[in-house]
Image 1 (cartoon, rainbow, N blue to C red):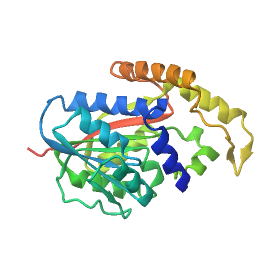
Image 2: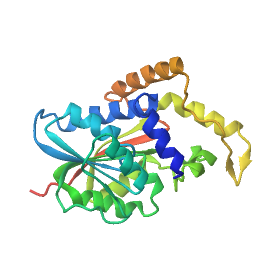
Image 3: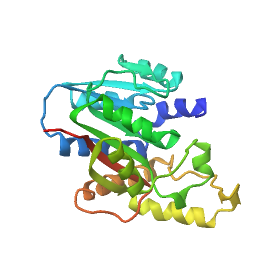
Length: 251
């Protein structure tokens, strides 16, 4: 990832509609699968970026200690600026914590960057406690792969069944699997269809996110509504795929 991207995320993560919607989704899934308020524990944000999510999580759940790892030293520096102490540089292979450390591991827009994603999922399973939860969010549907993915160094976009299968093989029991950003799927699909090709894929030069404040709030309002609807509806498509999976509990 280019270095300027880390600084950009540090600046926009608090207010950007997509970053806020992701946090709302993760909080909703955590509440659904771990409703015990006030219970002590630990969470790990795998690919913690600027650290805002850890900070927000600790504010909402003060009994849970937040930890973060990231492959880029720049992100660790931004986390320190936020006052986070439990953040560490990740080598890209073994997660630097003992087995059974965490109640929750979040993997938000990270797995698509990793060539050996199956090994990463096994590591996530290893550091989870028995019955611990992994919440994973990835770009969805290969027909949306474009030069934007290449710029962001995405190795792949996932299909739902593919991600579920990889989780199961890593020892994670899939509790929920949902397409996310249903309406925006059609916008991005149309952009891919109309865009000229470059190196065999649609060449997208514009982002789906907006920096316009009013439009940013309107999209965020829709996204929050969709997050709530995800409790009752399975959308057939989406820009992203969200999976909540537990470490197997052996009785």
